[in-house]
Length: 300
Ligand SMILES: Cc1cc2nc3c(=O)[nH]c(=O)nc-3n(C[C@H](O)[C@H](O)[C@H](O)COP(=O)(O)O)c2cc1C
Image (tube, rainbow, N blue to C red; front, side):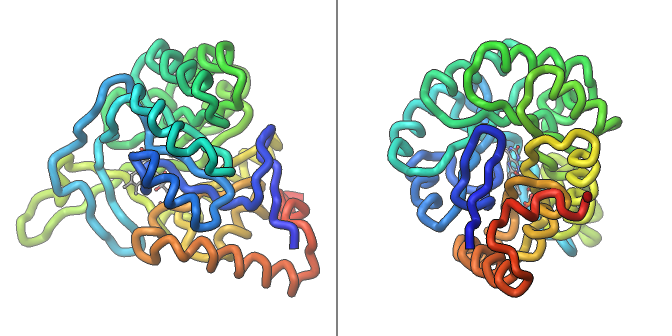
């Protein structure tokens, strides 16, 4: 079975990518994660300055998912030099996620990432719980164009735009592509709220959080399907993968690669092997030799 896929200019040994922010702020941690069979890794989102993140509680399990408001905690983009050093012989593509609030913040980090020799950039324009640093940026197609064109014009590596549930998703995607993005990562967590019925107040210190896990999977599949149908571009499908069939579903909808996140918190990193084995069995049973044949199949 050939699980290799082409994600734009990147060649992946399999389509499973670690989603941003799930594990590995340090290079050594990411390096260990890389040994579990992923086709690629995405770093946590990096900002210009270090961010401490929000006070606890920052995580809450809800039915069918996980609510988080970590607050884009990260050590600041200069730390990426050390991350690169630890990952230099990891052997799989590393995508660096960038967050910011102004065009020049994105361009400063992006040119540093390019210089360091990482493989791709993911612009996080969709964080649902940090004001001025996420969803609002992606909601404004003209600002999306400014950020993406600013970054694309100065880097040589592929640029992906990570979107969420925006006001007009197709406009956000269209402007990303006009700005020079190679593809789209869909989707980020969805802004949500949980209330403690005994404390009678919101569970998270930040009040709002981002919902991930199985609850958002069908929404993510719909968005991937629509983007592929409209634009036929490279897409990283992310959202609520808990087993191999969720990955196949994303691929049939049009994703060339698939990010996994929350499932790792419940099943551990061995889930990657379990998913890859499940995909191989499916391909064997259904008579497919190359996984790439399945990309966008449900859209035909
Ligand atoms: C604890 C946590 C931290 C996250 N941090 C980031 C981040 O820094 N940047 C980003 O683009 N997405 C971040 N995400 C979103 C994930 O990358 C992913 O888009 C989302 O969780 C949906 O996938 P899942 O249902 O497989 O977890 C985070 C998600 C979680 C649960």
